[in-house]
Length: 365
Image (cartoon, rainbow, N blue to C red; front, side, top):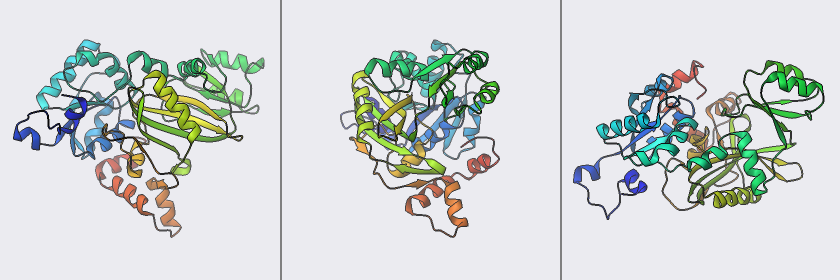
């Protein structure tokens, strides 16, 4: 049985009992925490699926969601051995009739790239392990860009803040510049530094190593794709200033990413961040070979990246989606939301306990 058959239970060439054919699909979401992973949960649940969640204590808030069918406690995926993780996943999958396993984040995507051959349960497409490693950190992605001739800001890696401070003091750091952690998600820890504040910013950094990249004047763009063997099946280009998602037609950015996908034979969901310079030149910044933080807003726009089926699709440009905080600002200005904004608001109001949990500030959902 193929992956899509397992996910959709709809292959006419496979004989199934009437009970199996009629039941809802069952998904096991592997979650290390509860932020990006909540987006994956909602997108998977929208596919008429019962979503089970497996993860450590940090992921348990997902059990508050009415879209979580059952929470299965597990040890830390980053610390457990590959053999133990594979056994644990298959055991839970067999006991609960799971049809497919989804990775919810970087840690669990990396895990599935390594244990896919040990699992008897089908998994959502993920990159090969070596390809994942080449894309998943900002410094390795710089090397990928250099290998394939893709424009990327020049950068340098410093082992700790003391080394960065010394480089600032002796003029080795070109300013303005971007200071970044290698493997944090959602822009956490990323900050722009200039001649006036670079030293103060460097002194306050709480992570190591530190990547310093040249600052490119221009506009941010993100592009997310779903691939099978390097063939792009889904694509969306967007920006999201002030909690408003704008969708763009970006042929040059699309070409760069499609060429990379083909050359590296990418599988699964891959998200790239880029910068379009004031002269129109496209600079690739980083890559996250996993599900991404804004995927629920993209789902409202019409593309569900948790759904592996369907022909190549590109989201329509020039049709915005506003997050609830932006819609609230509209209400305060006596402006009525547009159609997609109502849908996004309903999406959040449809999970009231999780919404209340988010309102406490406990998680950035």
